[in-house]
Length: 358
Image (tube, rainbow, N blue to C red; front, side, top):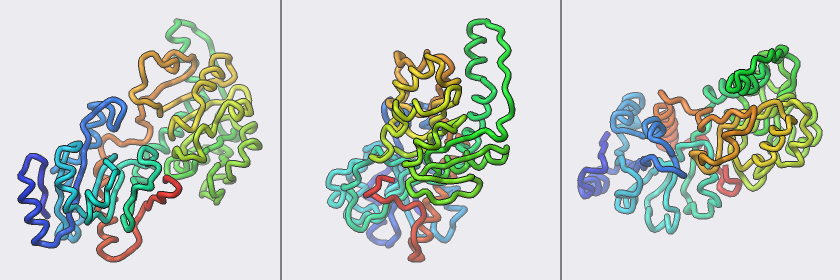
């Protein structure tokens, strides 16, 4: 195992990489910056792959560690030089132009998030290069957040919080969630986990996915064509879908109008999958009882956004599915597991299909 930091001499790395035949990993961390990832200093601390965190991963996968070396970089400080000899890139984003020339040895790109829409269209991926993402890392936290959101909306917590700000004592009663209907749009790791959590409380859970294949714990899973049939049944709608050409503005004004009065809305997927202007209008006129929204564009959410002041809307700062203590640990676990598979000639986990954008 060899680990180099970006403040070290790159010529040493090239010499090592060319003489010991180890697989070279370039790790591109990002400094916090508004409008990109991570957008906050708090996020930078959570998502940064440090030398210490990488060493811990090496200790968990000693056989893999013996066959790799890593260069830990920030932003684009040494990107061009390092990628000349890199075999693997671990990153959130990257310059995609002429990547085949910039990184002639590149074999694998690991994106440290579940969504890859910021890299679409993915016609830049060089032939023979595999792209994988972080699917699965978010499931446990995302499932809990989804369940929490349903319970908060069911118990009218967004309305109660509004009353508290106005010093208005109003008894808002509710019944248990059992037998109520949750429609989950996007039944991947996060949506699937949230639906399963809610099903354990006796809810009727209907999933919507591109393929419509059954998911454990769901009463049924249908394709998006069925939205016009299932949305009128929904007491709660949870959006957990990636942003693709097929899902862009999926929950638009017309589909929101199909949802029954008093329903609760949740979005932990991507902001572009829902018409937020229509959502604000529906909340203002009382069509929806409440909403919990975790994803925005841009992020951080601008101070003048009407979402901040919309009644019965809880804004959460894109924290629904990220474990602040173990995100990097789980990410590196995926990286090393796929490296182990690579060395054994096995199929990689979490392969992204560039033609689909996820």
